[in-house]
Image (cartoon, rainbow, N blue to C red; front, side, top):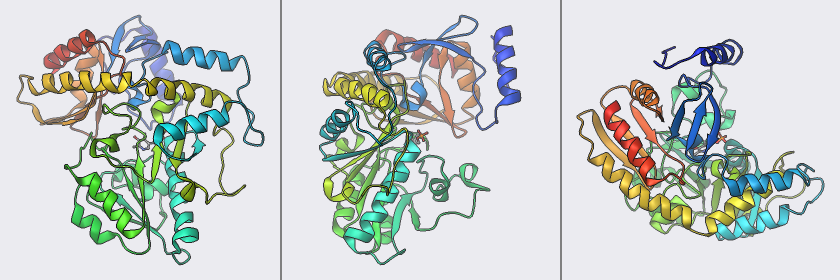
Amino acid sequence: MTEGSQTGPETERLRTLSEEHSAHNYHPLPVVIAEGDGAFVTDVEGRRYLDMLSAYSAVNFGHRNPRLVAAAREQLDRVTLVSRAFDHDQFGPFCAELAELCGKDMVLPMNTGAEAVETALKTARKWGYEVKGVPADEANIVTFVGNFHGRTTTIVSFSTDPVAKASYGPYTPGFRTVPYGDEDALRGAVDGSTVGVLVEPIQGEAGVVVPPPGYLRAVRDLCTEHGALMLADEVQTGLGRTGTTFACEHEDVVPDVYILGKALGGGIVPVSAIVADADVLGVFKPGEHGSTFGGNPLACAVAREVIAMLNTGEYQARSRELGAYLHERLHALDTDTIREIRGRGLWAGIELNGLARPVSERLMDLGVLAKETHDTTLRLAPPLVIEKKDLEWALDRLQKAL
Ligand SMILES: *Cc1c(COP(=O)(O)O)cnc(C)c1O
C-alpha cells in the first residue's frame, strides 16, 4: 500500500489493525480520522483536513451538524427502535414530510441505498404484474452502462463494472442494459413488458457523468409512452448536492419513484426510502416487503430534521452558488493534466490524463481529502456547509497537487 508522507505511529498502529483484520474490499487513503466538525476532519495525529468527499454525499450537511446532532440526541433520550410491528410517533410525520418534499403520496423506508434500490425494483415488478398486467415472470427493467446502484446480488447482476460484478453469479435475470445518454438505444430496449427504467439523473460512481441536455426528459416521456415506471436513483444526486432538491428538477422531470438514501440520514444513521404515489406503492400489503430497522424512531427523527433543513432551500442555494464558483475555478486551473471537468452544483468529476490516485495522495498531504473514482477521475463533493474561503483554499491546494 502506498504510504502518505505524514503517517505517524498511531496512524500506523491503527492501519495495521485494519489491514490485518478487515476484509480488503476498499483501498482507503492512509489517514485515520478521529473527529469531524462541519467541513473538516481531524486525524489521530491531530492533523486537520478539509473533507472534499462528504462520505459520497452522505455528509451533505457537514460532520456533526448541530441541528442534526440535537435531533438525534433528543430522540436517543426517548426511544430508538420498536420495529414496524408497532407504530411510533416519529413514523407518520416522517413519511408525511418526506412525501411532501417529493410531491408524492407515500414513503417506504429502508436503511441503505442498495435496499432502497431493491425496493424500487420489487415495486416495479409487483406493479408490472398486478397493475400493468405483464404476464408472470416476463417483466424487464432497463438499466444503463456505467450504472451504480449498490452491491446486492441482484444489483450487481446489471452492473457493467467487471470489478463490482465478477464471481458473483449466477446473476438475476430480467434486466436490459443500454448506453447512458443515448435516447435511441433506450427506445429500442423499452417494450410492453418493461415495468421500469432505473436511472441515475447524473451517474455518480461512474465519475459524475452528466447526461446530454433533454435526456432525462426523453426518459420520462418514453416511460410515460410505454407505461413503465421511471425509477430515479437520487441516492447520491438528491437532497441538495446538485443545487436543487432533486437532480431531476434540472429538466423539470418528475419520476414515478424517487430512490433516496445517503444524505437522508444526516451523516448520523443509515436512512433510505422510496417515495411514490399511492397507485404505485399501494401494491404492498402486510408481509410482502419489510425491514427490521427501516423507519426506526432514531432514523425518522434525524431524517425529519434533514427534511426541515432542505425545506429552507438554504443548502440547495449554497450548492448552486458555491458550485458555480467551484466550476469556474476548476476551468481556470493551469494544468495540462485535465481532460474534462463534469458536474453540477457543488459536485465535480475531474477526468485526468493520468492516474487520479497519486493526486488524491498529494492532496491528502496538503490537507485536503478527496478520492478517485475508477482510475482517472478525481471526484469533489464537499459538504454543502463549506465556507467559500475554505473552498478557495482547497482549490489552491488542488492546483498545487496537479
Ligand atoms: C451509494 C449509492 C447507492 C448505494 O447506497 P448504499 O447505502 O451504499 O447501499 C445506490 N445508488 C447510488 C446512485 C449511489 O450513489
